[in-house]
Image (cartoon, rainbow, N blue to C red; front, side):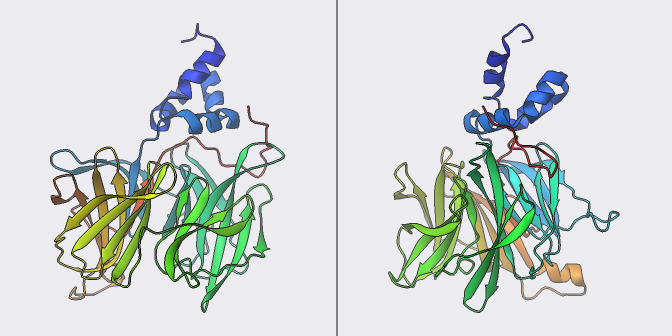
Length: 373
């Protein structure tokens, strides 16, 4: 390929999946520099095929895995995310919560005293000092926007401080390295019904619209720094006990609805004009434990979904801190077109996330922004 024009090489490499392309860094210095160029990484993010992987974790450890749903379902561990605590350099950073956006992972610890954004594919990480107002009950999300000055894609962190039935917000900009209070009006409960997900650069939650008396999808725009209602859910009635939100291939939104009797599962996916279509229904779902929370991933091509039910096991004998953690654990199931439920994992988990590798660069404090191509 050394005889090919540079622009043609760049065009070819921009269409290679990130997980494969990262191995080309050692090919030559020119390719290594190209794969770190922000203009190229943004082009690659737009053009390269997205390869979904799964993040599994338990007791603060995260593993990147590939999942096979053909025949006997299996999980293959690809990599493990290890972060060294910058304060206690001889200790591993114990991850409590993770938020995924564009291949970047925003990780926090249990007390919310540690905050780090990392890219497992490029091995980049940036530690961020939490707001002076941080609390253990805070939630953090990550989103993208186009910087007007540099014309590059940049990122912000949204901090949500819950108190009573209201919430206060702060925003963190990577270029400024500082937190500022966000003066926004929000009439929605963003944390009660489901975890947040990133879609098209915005953070999305399921919430209750008091005026319309229905469940809606609320989003936060990181460019305008304000909330807005994106759409209603497919339907809502008092019989729905659990709702879970997910993203299909970073292109569509999907929602899992569980009626109160908990023996039925419905999955709805958005189409090109953001209308809901029901794509999966399963009755007589059997389980052995009390379901505390549910997360899921749906494969539109294989018509299969991966479901993680976080369970509460009341009769477990608790003798220590680790055993106490085991009381709230999870089991992962794969359900295909044949509607057969197959358990995948043998060990308990407490974290379950979708992950799509990318070459997106994390802006460093000393890094000067360059205008993208």
